[in-house]
Image (cartoon, rainbow, N blue to C red; front, side):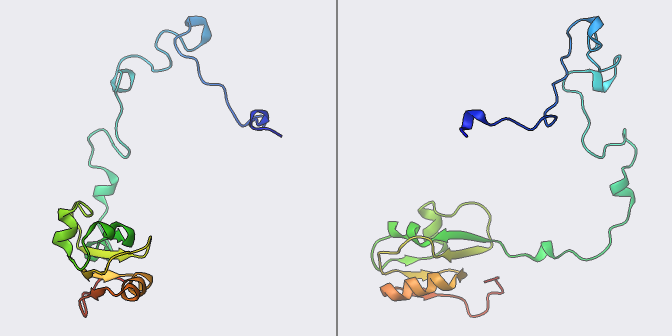
Length: 154
């Protein structure tokens, strides 16, 4: 069997509705959109849950329960291989990573991940690091400074 022999199963694909192909086609003139109104216009549609301006259901029902999302700590991931752009013996912290363009945007901290190989002895001061990254950094002779209890998820 070759790639060009592959076909969808019978009945899996429906023909597309051909609009505007004459009145006798059943989809001519207004092309199934009815007469006038918002849905008949080009680009005229309403978002999901819109009730015509009526106070929508999701706002009428009271909020209940607790959501932990407001308290999550978002850590920017940085791979070990990316740290090779620093000079040997350099201090790598949040400011240095942002200056080199490895981290951008709004984050609560930085986590070093073990992807790739680190070839330089660096002093790394971040909020978190994976166990494999810690092992690789110390094996090459680098130093890792982590806060004692940052509250960050490991």
